[in-house]
Length: 316
Image 1 (cartoon, rainbow, N blue to C red):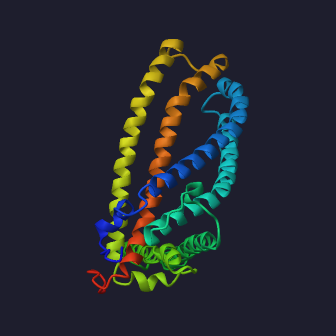
Image 2 (spheres, rainbow, N blue to C red):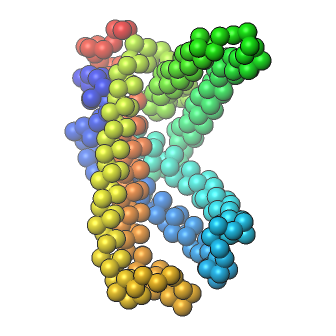
Image 3 (cartoon, one colour):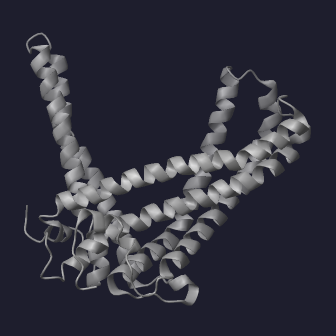
């Protein structure tokens, strides 16, 4: 793939480019969906006793009462704790899948054993870079927001001295500048993980040299992916409604429009299982494609660096 040319449209769909080992994308997708699905079902299984135990009290409470709100909040806190634990457990598998995707797109390597997954030095490097990039971007956003805070404090303290119109315009322009800087910083750092896989060692700020002159190409690729994912999400909502309608009809035929009762909890759960599984698998597949397409943008750029005929290699 040394003749790869970097452009926004190619980068956005680089993961779908024709290459050897075409089944790698499907195999890794299967591993991702299965891993996430098993963990999600485990979360549901752990959370179900809490919810079923709370249901009798919730059905007897006024939905607008403080006690009802506190019950729901306590359940939400339990779900957050369980979800955080599931995320930590899933992180090694996610790192392996993400690394395998990049290794396949950049080097054409795709092992068949265990979906082509492993967890060695390269996966550890990718995990370190993913965390480092996230932390650097977060701190960059926080520190770059300081001028806006200063302006807001000055505007509040010197409101009688500063003219409101010019001060508000200045604050808006500063916020827009901060937003552009944050996006610019994140986009320029985005090839770091792909660069780490290509060079076989941790690369973070080296991504600035690789992405030099390619900001708009990278930005447009991510923007194009954003709109594609939004469109796919809307389509998924439509499919979810179509799948759910027959089961809703069965539920109405069996129980009418009456409020749920504890006697029918098992039937409600059974009716919801099929549409829930369809929606979960479809949503997880879309989630996987979002990550895969995002990884493809950085992979496309670092592969294109090998091509002396790269049309976009000159800084804009």
